[in-house]
Image (cartoon, rainbow, N blue to C red; front, side, top):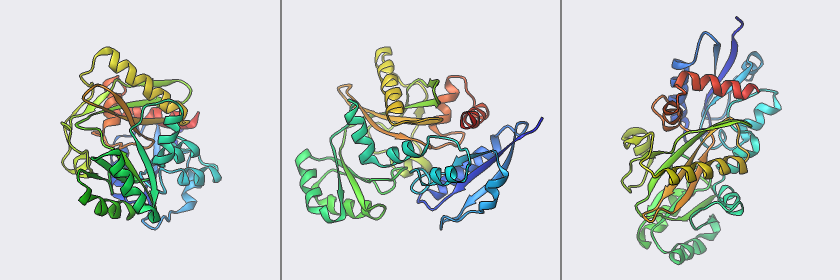
Length: 307
């Protein structure tokens, strides 16, 4: 049997570089070596890689996260070099990494989102006025961030200036969103191109606390791979996840995150087009819950990229 050569692309010029290393290690240790030969392709923190390695692979598995990796730039680079790759394509990646654009696509499609607005560096005065207008608490976040990096929950106006400065360290545009009070954080995994498989909704058991980088990677909250939801609510969330996946043009796989408020109103938080992918990350756990174990999930994602 001739094995498929998989270029495992990891690292990257991104503030999620370290997260990527964890993802790559987990994939490397669990990929089906009877089917695949792995070629490590490391992108250093200056964005450099050994381009010659791309000539020796059949498909790239993107074990990267964050700006320059998840925002369509790497995807466009690979397409320009004739390389097939895992996960959503160029445009879906661009839309879903740009939180303002993503929210506007959701809103235009009639999908439920919290109040939000984006601002540039010269619009700090307007940003402060907007935060006061929609009433605190709010979240301030970089427009193109991930893993909650650069994000702050602002509960009093005195915290806003520091939150804005922190978010602007990561991007020239920031997003201010109305915070959902004590929300349940619900997540849904989707796998597929034209034919898709949707997981049951799972839950990050935050107990209403902010789901920070620390809580995602160093001191994680407990999770439930099946959230305690009424069947009608679970079905509604799955339908919204499917609509969001389709309207933003996703393929391959993605994780769709929701807030559920105390009155059971649903809000789409975001689509993560290259979600955390260690064996204990939420996306693989959601898929395992419906019978697609981690090793098989890696295989399926590669097969989808080759379709």
